[in-house]
Length: 233
Image (tube, rainbow, N blue to C red; front, side, top):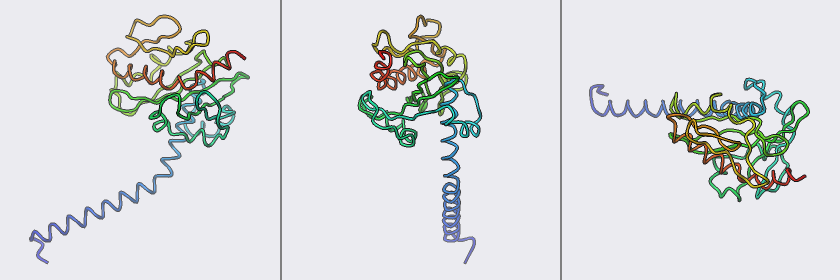
């Protein structure tokens, strides 16, 4: 074959593309189980971090059941399943596409130093992509004990600051309801928060802050009826 011909060039390019595609596909499949394990460990790490247990991913995986005593599935404010695996495997990215009072959502019942805490997962939209997090509530199902947040591609130094203590440290002590009426926690303009139901947003990160505000309302609402019953008991 004439190596200087167009036919040779096209054939060579096609063969190389096919080889690279096969190699990339094989690599992706080979790493899939490892990626899945990393996602699971990171999820456990974030749940534990919301109640103040700061461990690396591997350590979190090992001690998860030491602190997380139940993983429930709720729908319409009622427990519909106590299957821990089913609750943990709920994909919040898909769940939030449904009306918040109709979707099935997980609730993690944890214990630390003899106290019970409830951990609620969050999922929403930031400026450039998804944002997520976990809110931990005291045994009254109302008072926040801790919060963690994550994002895929928010702007460093701006919206990405939702993951830092300057934002998350505002949450402990805040409330999500008042006399049994759901209020959520509002993320307001930086420097203007007041009272039990507001935190300051990120200066310069207005769209991300608004996304977290909407996420809190949307993702906490499905739990309001369940926590209201706890408050009364």
